Image (cartoon, rainbow, N blue to C red; front, side, top):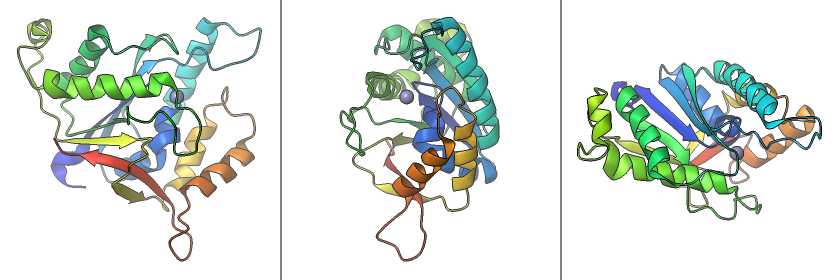
Length: 232
Ligand SMILES: [Zn+2]
């Protein structure tokens, strides 16, 4: 990876989204020397059907799991915004929080989820938070992060405008870039296993992920993760 592309900010809705959507690619970049930061907008506090579980306990568990998974991937740190799961909206507050991290971390590349995906490539309904995370992130990148007239309160925090060069949309129905992840597929799976509260049958999950990432149009075993890459 070229030098300037080494700062990467991943903005997604829930703990486990980075690993599920693009974990093998992130692991590949981390091993090539990228400094990867996660910004997660909710703490996934509705991700349980256990009647004894409370949102507060689940939030704490999932943050612990996410930190462990990020370590397996090779990400530097995880920032949590703790909006409520399923209640994420593309508000000025959410955008300001994303702009703050963009201006603070100055990423060359931002990874988020495609806000246009109502139906996922696997034919399931896409979670509203995934769409919202993508929309709020795109709105934060342009025009707000690079324009000093947006969020003047951030200037007073010492955060100067910053322009993101590349946007990588995961969970997209219109990929234009495929990353070959044969070398880091196992790391993705190992990181996913850290999300213990979410994964009931690890072996079944591994089989499903391998199936989903395997390319039928190549000879031999080729695994990829797809993105819609935009260079605004
Ligand atoms: Zn999610």
